[in-house]
Amino acid sequence: MKQLTVPLLLTALGLLAPTASADLLVGRLVTAAGTPVAFGDLDFRFPGGSGGNPATVNDGANALGQFAVTIAAGSYDVTFNPPLGTNLLGVTRISVAVAGTTNVGDIVLPEGVTLSGTVVNAAGVGVAGVNFDAFDAAGVDQAVLYASSGLGGAFSFNVPAGQYELNLNPASVVGAVLAPRTLPINATTNLNLGVLALQPGFTVSAIVRNASNLPMNNVDLDVRDASTKTVLYTPGDKTNATGLVDVVVPAGTYYFDIKPIFATGMAPRRVGPTTVAATSTLGIVQLQAGLALTGTIRDAYGVAVPGANVDLVQTNTLADVLLVNDGTDALGAYALRVPAGVYDFEFKAPGGSLLGSEFHPAVSVTTATVLDGVLPPAVIYACFGDGSGTVCPCGNSSMVGAREGCVNSLGVGAALRATGAARIASDSFQLVGTQMPNSSALYFQGTAMAGAGLGTTFGDGLRCAGGTVVRIGTKANTAGGSSYPVAGELPVSVKGLNAAGATRVYQVWYRNAAVFCSAGTFNLTNAAEVTWAP
Image 1: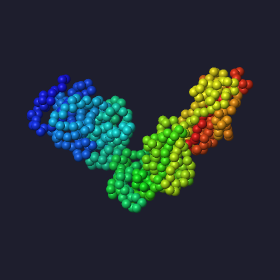
Image 2: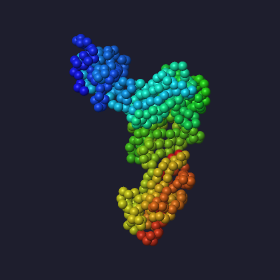
Image 3: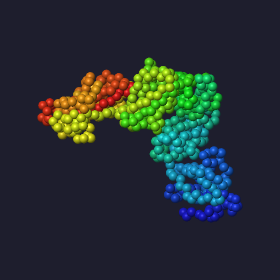
Image 4: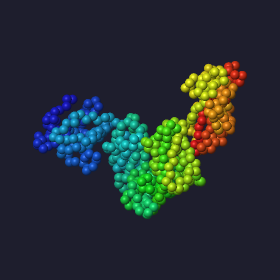
């Protein structure tokens, strides 16, 4: 369709000829294909959202998608909304300057994904007035229009395609106290979520004060299920100027975590476990002054590690210590408040970083303390048969960069790799050997690297795992490989008698009976070194 000129547009919209002082924002709403979007709506805000909404006249589009909004000259944040019943998304433009007649042309409303369903209470009765928030991975709410349930509990609103945390907030529901709810969703196409039930809710309140017994404002309250440790969705969970906070939760047993920001000087505090079966109060919760615990976490090359995590347990009791903002920032720095005490520290790498953990046992914190961390690679592969260390027995070096042992009768070096987590509490660590003859293979552990990390000649290969040696397991290679453990076998940490903080070296010693190199009839893989986390 040919876009109308401003005079024709005004006529089509049925407006009288504007006076000399009239200011107009004109344009047209269209789809990505250029089809007009009939009867959309425009919302205006003063820049930055301050000062509320300015006065407007005729702030909707006509049947041809055209709009001509009368508004005082100025700068506004403008949201162009689709009508109800489409799968289109609104578009916001920031600081749109209006002076005289301002034509913004075609505003393209992109397609989204429609989320629909029905909200009911525990009796199966539809609930109107439940508000929805759909937070993406960046924490931005994408459910901004029509995102509440109507009569009978029905809802339908649009979001961009993606994965979300969908929060149901029933605070505006009339006549009943219902517990909020959250659920993860993967919205790649239009999605009917079916019937979503909300449980009866009970209000739990508290008054938070500092060490001087003064009320604390803007302190966060987290509610954690006592059995699963899952944090509940509790909107409105920050204290006001009087220190009061209240949340609504379903019946259950919970920990209540009071979490002040670092600048307050107060240490966080956990209350509970507390069983909730009626409206109740935690009373006055007084926080104690906390000692500053700061530092920077880097990798072995001195590069800062953003998103690393700091975990503390009390050394004597191994009880978890409640922390606030226990991750590192973009510069690898962290800043925490803790009571005086003796703690075991663990610095954990962010997911997908290929870094390991660092453990600091029995650190005494009696004053402001700085403790930096250096995260090792999750597994260090070393002692290769490529000539970078001790020379292989008969010049049978493997290819540089292959990260494997000395070459065997198959024409390649055997390789040892590791998967899973080397953690004492939840050991999923597995050793995997490949490129070996189909013969017997001994997986073993040492407490140090042999030959100062370069290895020593042994059979047709290099022995790398030295010190105190422990046999982990003997396997029969199939299709050139094997692994330890498999289903039914003890974890590596148990077989190796390992404790948190122990650094161990692993290698596979395998039979290679073919006449090939030395008089020996065996060879070895490269080594894998790991430090066991708690």
